[in-house]
Length: 479
Image 1 (tube, helix red, strand yellow):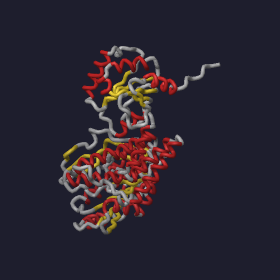
Image 2 (cartoon, one colour):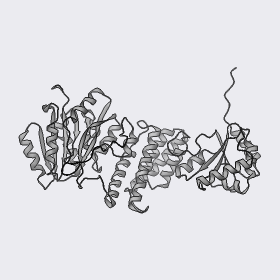
Image 3 (cartoon, helix red, strand yellow):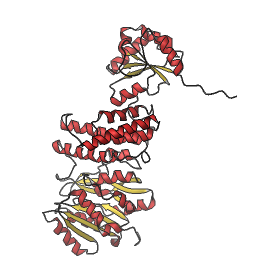
Image 4 (tube, one colour):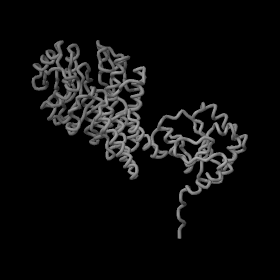
């Protein structure tokens, strides 16, 4: 590589890392990359074990290639931010993260810089890692070989979980002002950088070379259990919520908005399991947050009424993130997602159904088997109608067997005109809302609590009339 290679600032946040920081810094200095194009910036974050002294000795050996900054303890993210403020980092073409207890193989920068030079659309590139113990013995050859490392520009994918390990990250300096400073209440620099970069550029992955990730029992999150695991999950929810409260329809597509919210909901469920109780505060919600959630939910409903569903969904996500416990905010978000149609993300209980769906309760059919044949006679000749049997309260296998047998018994199983669907559960809140939203008519002995038009078993003619009035208009014939 020529002497005009991009300059790289290596950002090292160090706390109580005296046994390892020397190896980390020397691995950066020993890269197979032009030496005058690599500068290591180390912030000693209030260590009391001599971490700063180790780095100071290396800096004396390489006075033009190592900067040491000492500060009172501000945490890992605070130390990374301080690294990024230094002149060497401000002037660099590329910024690379290196944890003080990790190390780089000699060809790491060369491989990543080559990719960045070949692909100008990529703003961040990361690699796999090889897990080593405190003594440097390999305990896991590849961290990501059994997964599908995320790539591309998918906000929801990178928000879902943190697979972009810190010491493997190299980012373009042109993104510096958008990436730094990292908010103080973030627990991890790497997850933040990955999510934020995915909003601005493509992200690329290299399976090799593999960063050496040291697992020594004092790591911030890897392998956390019990109370420590719950703490890490809360940190993750805080990060996800930060981004969700700022999503903009102009930047995030409908499916991405749905998947991003689902990522937050899944992590919250995991945190409740870790806590052992649903009655636990997972994120801090203030009175201002509650007021914001109410205002955003109302705004989302107004946008929905104006048929601006994409913008309404983004606003609803922001509202539900402001106060995840608000029935109003969460209900608004669920209702909007239900209105998106059967191509939306998540449960789709009426997938493949025709334009108009007649819903009949499974327990009514089992009590009154001829009702199924009567529905087939009333609606079977309508080509845009599906008869859906609601069996969500039944065991799925039992419902399938009993309703199939009933269809055979009533002679409707082989009716070529009839589109008969079985809806089984369990359905979550969103699935139940999408089922309701997809119905044109309910038939049954009990009036439901929702606003779907309802008819009793002796009112099938009236139901048919409503369906005929509801049928989509046929395209005009050519003149």
